[in-house]
Image (cartoon, rainbow, N blue to C red; front, side, top):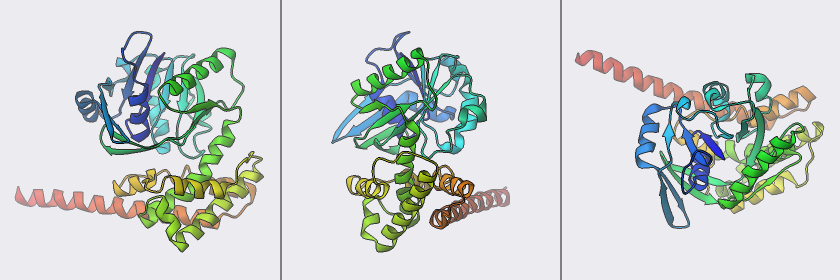
Amino acid sequence: MRIAIVGPGSLGCLFAALLFPKEQSEDNSLWLLDHTPDRAHFLNTQGILYEADGDQRRSMIPVTANPLEIGPVDVVLVCVKAHALPACVHSCKPLLSPQTLVVFLQNGIGHLEIQAQTNLPAIPAFASSSEGATLMAPGQVFHAGQGMTHLGFLHNPTEPQQQLLSTLAHKLQQAGLSSSLSPDIRSQLWAKLFINAGINPLTALYNRTNGQLLTSCAARSRLKNIVREAEAVARASNIAIDTDPLQATLAVCKKTTTNISSMLQDRRHKRPTEIDAINGAVVREGKRLGIATPFNEEAVQQIKKMEDEYLNTSRTRMRTSTEAGTERT
């Protein structure tokens, strides 16, 4: 199987390190695609360092910023943030053929209409992964906790499409990543959305790890209200819910007590977050259904204010630096 992983973030590096074959061949290969040429060159030189349980291993995975260097593949794993998807799909077209399976691994549910939004010339599939991964430095990923990766289609696949996804699931299992095929991937994505909606914005706003949310009465109360709102929206959308969303979210907080959520990582690195695809999606769906979501709306507003503040600070620093350089000249 020829695989291309798009995005050298925490999940992209984790999957790349574990799926990388012992020997690359024409029929069994893995590439990592980055949108930044300088970083691609750096990763190509140093490799991907995987850390877990005190062990380290480095894989010299081929990394490029030029999709033409890779060409069409069997499977593309898209591991970029939700807000980067439209540009990502456009740049990835050299990787695609009508038979290529494109698996989207984004948080939230904002990407479910990606085929219609981008005229994707390939087969879309979706995944929900609870693998715990933290990017310690470029190309250095820490596997913080084992999870489960659910894979599935939104619509009935053909037999070859189903077989290709089954083969991918088997490869994940061989690599030590628990995975399964889901007949209702939309419900799996909502199940993860409940957890992301409750944990991600609050860890970013309070600057706390997942487990530390449970030690704050204020944070725990907000988490409960956010998740219950999302649950009400999901039920009105006829989403199947098998496990109590609040109890599942609290369990994740306990299980991943030291984990730094992706949104908190974004805050600390002053990057745009996925708030629109997570809590923002709950708000939009709630408005469509006539369900009030004030706690999710508050989280969205506060995260966006936080983003604006560090973006404005960054612009001010750049302007100050430019002005200082002009004065010296």
